[in-house]
Image (cartoon, rainbow, N blue to C red; front, side):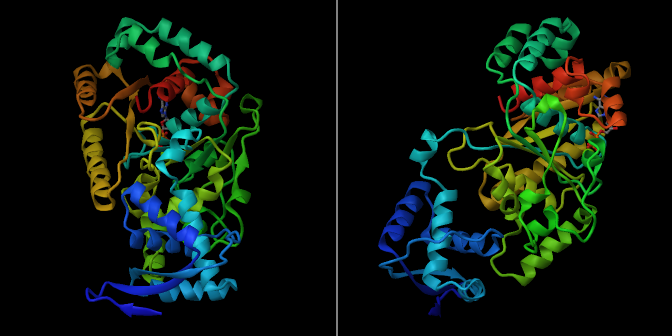
Length: 428
Ligand SMILES: Nc1ncnc2c1ncn2[C@@H]1O[C@H](COP(=O)(O)OP(=O)(O)O)[C@@H](O)[C@H]1O
Ligand SMILES: [Mg+2]
């Protein structure tokens, strides 16, 4: 039963829910500082959009429970229950149970091992090194533990005074920074979220043909199978089966308009959450997810920024955005637009998105004052740290030509060590 509320934007929905779940919901909302009506709205919205079959929840002894939902969501919820052959009691119990699991109590989170690390590599300017840095950072997280940490030590030892000056750090500061560097060994998913498919192509992985099941169909709520089936492992022995790729699709060019259409057709569909909702089923299999973003600031990019937000009680600086730039004025203008978009999203959706750092890429000291003065400006940016300054390195170009992962092709090279340094410094 639903009755309109006086404001007209929400309607009262009368449900039934077991008292234990009602109590858990009330306590969790209080702990997280949320309104129950907003939590139930999110719970039902996620449950309806989820492509995974819900687990059966014990709904015995359900008692009356009512709340206010956005207009139409109650009807949509009932339609989904009918389509899935579930009672309304079971549908709501499943929605609330998964919301509680997705939004753990602050007490549980502290006791839990680390939340999955989500690194969104972004900049709407093309050619700055997003794909390069995404792949390198993913490889550094996944490589065989041991060698990487030793290589990074030697690398810091070998840096010249000029290189240290560019980084604006002393050697001692860098040694302190890398002291707890984990040095690989993690399960990593690299997501090709750019319809130009550079990442997939560079790693020699076939992109997903237009019209087939892909990240796009999972984001727009029209998948027919499980997203796990789309993932491809990188076979190189250096990663011992821990590095996987979700290939891109050219259909990504249509993602912004598809998301807008889905939102218009399906009440309660929250566009910005689409990437998170699609990737959720994969999170249990990985320690780290790296997103290679498209060169745009559209809706797709908002979904990636949303995915980078700090989750309740996640350690600051673990997940967030990593921004490759170049030492030139047009890069500064592009960064300004990206920074504004991030701030707007934070304000609109009341999120915090951690800035994991800036990578000044393709640094060309032959450009003299232009390069050095611009580098100085990157160092002075508020709320951001320069985590690496990278030269134009031939190994990087070779590895792309050979379609081999950088850290497998030249694990001891300068460029591989730069990737490890980025991982060691990101978010610190
Ligand atoms: N540090 C580097 N040294 C040499 N080549 C690089 C370096 N970084 C990126 N490149 C090359 O520059 C081109 C653009 O980089 P890419 O990572 O594809 O940028 P984006 O993803 O931002 O468009 C690619 O051909 C890449 O191999
Ligand atoms: Mg790219």
